[in-house]
Image (cartoon, rainbow, N blue to C red):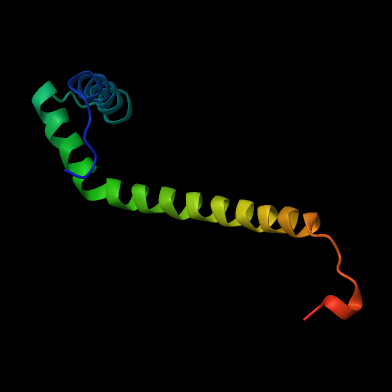
Length: 85
Protein backbone atom coordinates (compact mmCIF):
# COMPACT_ATOMS: atom_id res chain seq x y z
CA UNK A 1 0.00 0.00 0.00
CA UNK A 2 1.31 3.44 -0.91
CA UNK A 3 0.03 5.36 2.11
CA UNK A 4 0.13 3.75 5.53
CA UNK A 5 -2.54 4.68 8.04
CA UNK A 6 -2.59 3.90 11.73
CA UNK A 7 -5.21 1.47 13.00
CA UNK A 8 -7.11 4.38 14.57
CA UNK A 9 -7.13 6.32 11.30
CA UNK A 10 -8.38 3.30 9.38
CA UNK A 11 -11.18 2.76 11.89
CA UNK A 12 -12.19 6.43 11.71
CA UNK A 13 -12.19 6.51 7.90
CA UNK A 14 -13.95 3.16 7.72
CA UNK A 15 -16.76 4.52 9.90
CA UNK A 16 -17.04 7.60 7.69
CA UNK A 17 -17.23 5.39 4.60
CA UNK A 18 -19.99 3.30 6.17
CA UNK A 19 -22.00 6.46 6.96
CA UNK A 20 -21.36 7.79 3.45
CA UNK A 21 -22.66 4.62 1.79
CA UNK A 22 -25.71 4.65 4.06
CA UNK A 23 -26.49 8.35 3.41
CA UNK A 24 -25.67 8.58 -0.29
CA UNK A 25 -26.65 5.12 -1.55
CA UNK A 26 -28.97 3.81 1.17
CA UNK A 27 -26.60 0.85 1.37
CA UNK A 28 -25.14 -0.61 4.51
CA UNK A 29 -21.63 -1.96 4.26
CA UNK A 30 -19.85 -3.73 7.02
CA UNK A 31 -16.62 -2.80 8.72
CA UNK A 32 -14.64 -5.40 6.76
CA UNK A 33 -16.11 -4.24 3.45
CA UNK A 34 -15.29 -0.62 4.17
CA UNK A 35 -11.71 -1.51 5.16
CA UNK A 36 -11.21 -3.55 1.98
CA UNK A 37 -12.59 -0.67 -0.09
CA UNK A 38 -10.35 1.78 1.79
CA UNK A 39 -7.30 -0.40 1.07
CA UNK A 40 -8.25 -0.41 -2.62
CA UNK A 41 -8.65 3.38 -2.66
CA UNK A 42 -5.31 3.87 -0.89
CA UNK A 43 -3.53 1.55 -3.28
CA UNK A 44 -5.06 2.90 -6.48
CA UNK A 45 -5.71 6.58 -5.75
CA UNK A 46 -3.04 7.66 -3.28
CA UNK A 47 -0.19 7.72 -5.85
CA UNK A 48 -2.14 10.31 -7.87
CA UNK A 49 -2.80 12.44 -4.79
CA UNK A 50 0.79 12.09 -3.60
CA UNK A 51 2.23 13.05 -6.98
CA UNK A 52 -0.08 16.07 -7.17
CA UNK A 53 1.04 17.18 -3.71
CA UNK A 54 4.69 16.82 -4.73
CA UNK A 55 4.04 18.86 -7.89
CA UNK A 56 2.38 21.62 -5.86
CA UNK A 57 5.20 21.59 -3.28
CA UNK A 58 7.78 21.81 -6.08
CA UNK A 59 5.94 24.79 -7.56
CA UNK A 60 5.84 26.59 -4.20
CA UNK A 61 9.55 25.93 -3.60
CA UNK A 62 10.46 27.13 -7.10
CA UNK A 63 8.55 30.40 -6.56
CA UNK A 64 10.25 30.91 -3.19
CA UNK A 65 13.67 30.18 -4.70
CA UNK A 66 13.08 32.84 -7.35
CA UNK A 67 12.18 35.35 -4.64
CA UNK A 68 15.20 34.30 -2.58
CA UNK A 69 17.48 34.71 -5.60
CA UNK A 70 16.05 38.19 -6.21
CA UNK A 71 16.61 39.10 -2.56
CA UNK A 72 20.20 37.85 -2.67
CA UNK A 73 20.90 39.74 -5.91
CA UNK A 74 19.52 42.89 -4.31
CA UNK A 75 22.19 42.58 -1.59
CA UNK A 76 25.06 42.78 -4.08
CA UNK A 77 27.11 45.92 -3.97
CA UNK A 78 27.49 47.56 -7.38
CA UNK A 79 31.09 47.51 -8.59
CA UNK A 80 32.77 50.38 -10.37
CA UNK A 81 32.77 49.99 -14.16
CA UNK A 82 36.50 49.23 -14.42
CA UNK A 83 36.31 46.27 -11.99
CA UNK A 84 33.43 44.45 -13.71
CA UNK A 85 34.35 41.43 -15.78
